[in-house]
Length: 384
Image 1 (tube, rainbow, N blue to C red):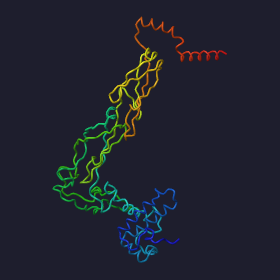
Image 2: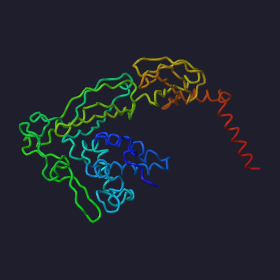
Image 3: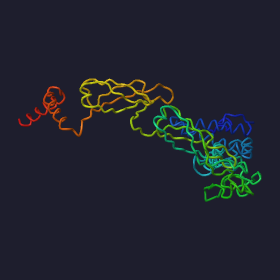
Image 4: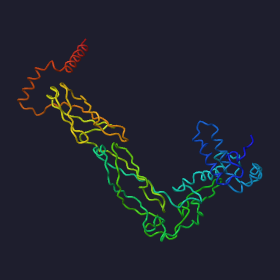
């Protein structure tokens, strides 16, 4: 099968500029990357094809040879670069693909210490920071403004982030010629590593700032005011853009991520937007019924009617007395759960009254009567 024209593969005209070629290649590479086209069996072959085309057309000498001789320029010993029919991921085509990958992703990786070419920036974005903040349940209910102290790197006040004494400009690294990396040939492979002199920056500072040592940033504690919205839960993450670590040599700041932990409460237990409150009541109150006063998370009080004969575990719901939803989608409920309390440390008179009460209430314990009736039936069955 005849090879397609390289310009046709990239979807550009023959006289396209280097920038137009690069733009077209990036678009095609993103569309046809095999990882994004697992359902397309032709994607890998098409991806190889655009890489091969761009690898030739991005180089002025090979482009000139291709414009003059077409595919024949790289066949039959005419030289000029990797063989167009080389296997993907092997030999010299793999080396060419590495260069193509650098062209595609160099802009993104260059600013973060990845491989980069001569056009990489000497500045690097600062790291993101994490801060763990504990708040009370009451603060999570109402929302609160907190002041936190964050140890971080800030821009050097002396060199204003340049890293150079007196604001002098960095110079091109003589070891890597500004590439930020050096290459060494090992047999059939070309090994690429970060330049040891400039640490991948592509530039060096001859006279580093004495305050920051050429980093362009210094260590310092900063006080920040943080607004904690209503309804936050443990695990809620708040992002403060640009409040992270200062960038290296004048690069942009990272972000600060605040992770919320809501402390346990002495009275309420939380389940999402709902609150649970276990309320103990005396045995006479449970038997006779009545009212019990309970607290609410907003600091108020609510009176709850206890039905006569209430048992431990009986639940009653107070609508709208729970936690607000984080993004304003309503408010939860508060669930009251009764716990009938057995009296302890009885006096002799109390014991006497309880024994009398027990004799008079044999027919007032339906659950107990039912249970022991079942037990008797079980034992009788075992005997038979």
